[in-house]
Image 1 (cartoon, rainbow, N blue to C red):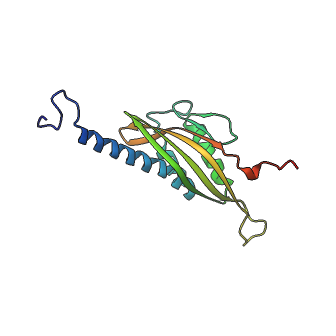
Image 2 (cartoon, rainbow, N blue to C red; image 1 turned 90 degrees about the vertical axis):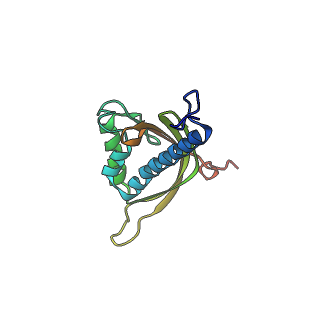
Length: 170
């Protein structure tokens, strides 16, 4: 091993490579969590910060988002608008992420997870709680490493149909 922590062929030693891989994985998981926390908190600025910046993606290209039941949204303007619409029309939302898997390959990272969602709509009468509804969405979040850290490049959510969604045919 040389003085700079590399092995004679210039490659990182196994310990250093494993350490960097673990650090990348943790940073990607933190970026992924920031997306869901921002949505729970109704913080549009924080949601915009999770996505690739205007330097990496413009208002028409560079980022892609598919919410369950929505068409493909491209560009920061459409993606930001979609989150604003969701937040404006949802009184309460909470995510419980399960089945979270992370794979990092160089400057790209893939996160797959199940979003167990608890959300509530507007109450029928003032002062009362609105109805709470649960649902599941399987999501794929693709991140890119940037100078500012890991940023979301693409989000794709697909609803999960549970046995309760199927009508029994008797």
